[in-house]
Amino acid sequence: MSGVVLIRPPQVLSKYSLSTAITPPLSTAYLSGTLHANGHIPQAIDALGEDVDRLTPMPGTVGLAQGLTVDDIVDRVDASAQLIGFSSMFSSAWTYDKKIINRLRQRFPKALIVAGGEHITACTEYVLQDCRALDLCVRGEGEETLLDIVNTYFAGRDIQALNGVAYRQADGSVQVNPARGRIRAIDNIPEPYWDDLPIETYLSRGFGHGVNRGRSMPLLATRGCPFQCTFCSSPYMWGTKWEARSPEKVLAEIKKYLDKYNAENFDLYDLTAIVKKQWIVEFCDLVGKSGLKFSWQLPSGTRSEAIDAEVVDKLWDSGCRNMNYAPESGSPAVLKRIKKQVKLPRLEESARAAIKRGFNLKINIIFAFPDETPYEMWETFKFGIKCAWMGVSDSSFIPYVPYPGSELYYELVKQNKIEPPSDKYFDSLIPFSDLAFAKSYNPHVKDRHLVWARYLYFTLFYGTMYLRRPWRLVHTLVNLVRGREESRAEASLHHILFRHKLLLRRRLEGLFGKSEAGGAQV
Image (cartoon, rainbow, N blue to C red; front, top):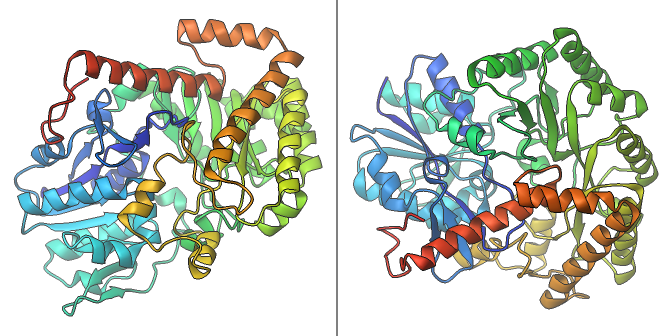
């Protein structure tokens, strides 16, 4: 059936962002796959992948929108569109997403405009009041709900009766229907459909979620996270159910991509991929028996509890080369308050085994939680330096950001320590990983202190790591010159250089005077 359009908007980031987020639209591909498997043929638009070399400054903010301009997106929507599905994943991009939705409404006044994603689920009532062009919100996992909406809408039945949706009533108030349960039989979810998305752009140019290890396809082996970290939106919005696909299904999808796309590497986008030792051992053993040759990595962050010396060897033998551990803090007291169920000595033991085997290991650190004391911050500094001395190759160092949908966010709103949702607030989230900007929500640390703390931490971490293993500095310099990547730090530097190259070309071509509507190909 025609008339359905799925849109992945441009990504929004800042000039000096350490993010390496030029990633294939996995969620859009899953939605498209579900519709195709049930007889619908949607039009899919990936605004990032279809114009990855375009940067559009967002006036009044430090933001840059990477991808198609607003008008370009609207112009690509088929004139017969009756139902437009829009993915809004990040609160930091909401003001730009809203601009696109409003423009879609102007061009398609009779179409049903539906939005889903992390931001929509976290701020459902707000976005429906803030964006009157939006008709319906999908809350939670989207595959089954979107399919029900499409079937119900084109059959002429009442879409407002469906679970998992929200909408404005005639009096302007927002009705949030009962939540739809999590999908339990995840092996039955149709695989992502990539044929009408620009996947080759990502494959040929080395774009992906992790380190560039060649032609990289995105993959989900599990869904959900069983933990309740207070800074994360997952517990409030998705629950704590962790579901794993069968190892056979995951390996079959890998084989398909090896054959169809000549893939060489797979980035797992899982929230928490390794929870059960039995599952990961079975998967690694299957890979070994298959004889297939590929690399894979865990760039999102995973738990260390199930990764002992035995699992480390199996991961390596199966082709895994890069992993992210997510301790978040080096202070036991902070870990307890944020409900991060991680034992630092156990994580260090796991990390040593992985480093000894040859893994490129990264740790994720969040700094300056609202109630974190100066001593606790110092504990985190010391832990990071200790990890660098152990041989951990990379570390993020992100100032705490209160994202909608998380427990800490709602606590801060109740305490009047942050303003309620607004364009100003969402725009303030844009430079969350920027080297030049920071916003402090901790009474002991000012904004400028956070900027300098980040520089100090990176100097100490990488200085210690290179001092302990000086040959890595040589590898890093060679990789930067040759455009190769072995670590997330190298990937971040390449992305920053890529953005600056685009901005420099834009200046040289004298295109700053062009309007946002016209855009600027750089």
